[in-house]
Image 1 (cartoon, rainbow, N blue to C red):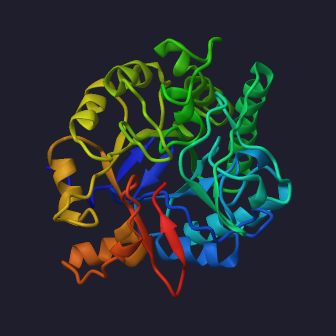
Image 2: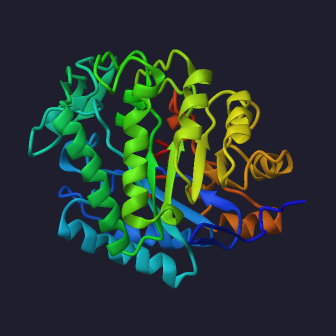
Length: 360
């Protein structure tokens, strides 16, 4: 029987155990998008995880969707991340960066550049964005042109190369949770009539192109993808979840691993397990009577043969030394459920030390 503490290798990424720290937005970067000393301390504290997946990191300035989130598109940002990766490696850990283009999620008032958000189609997201001036409605985004889509692919490639230069063990491409690549996948946000819209083959095209381009640039063995089937976060309605992922998953190239953020149902996860022959990480759904997902939940995922490793969010926020606590049988600090995000079920506050975090 596979244990949470069995070592494993995902491509060229070595995991000392199968407990993965899920990507969680921190909002602790410098205004310029650089990593901070606090971020280096935060990730180093959690280096006993088999693998750390960082907070969403924008591959370009226009890809930013939130205040104080980090980037990997400027030399100073690359330099600042080196302190983080060095700290994790010095503590025996492995770390990959999640590249997240927010697409239509954001607002011009968030940034000095005051740039307009972009999307597959000019369809505004329902809801509001928290800005320095308070809550503001999401604006209608700019529809990406074919040339701009090509430039976006190159932005991911450049950011991936920057990640390796910054010392990361690999890259995760975020194709879920209602951000840009997910917006191309979903029916309600993609109304295009060109080769990036309409049919399933067209809607999955950008995610596949980005993944293939990144894998070519840094190696398949250092490239990964995150998906979140059925997730309605950020006003997403996929429309045809089962057939969508039946088309997407087999079209992806060989990867170090694929991660599934399990939102509300296990059948979609099982379907992806059947479709994907490579390494799989599952971020398990926290059931109503078990919040957040527990060590027992994680071991059950392995016992069912659903995944090769399990990613956890809230428990790693509240318990930086989570693997040791699991081995000792506790005790466990409990994340603050008051900051629960309805559509994205692993958002927590860990004040006063490190501020907010949500599994995006």
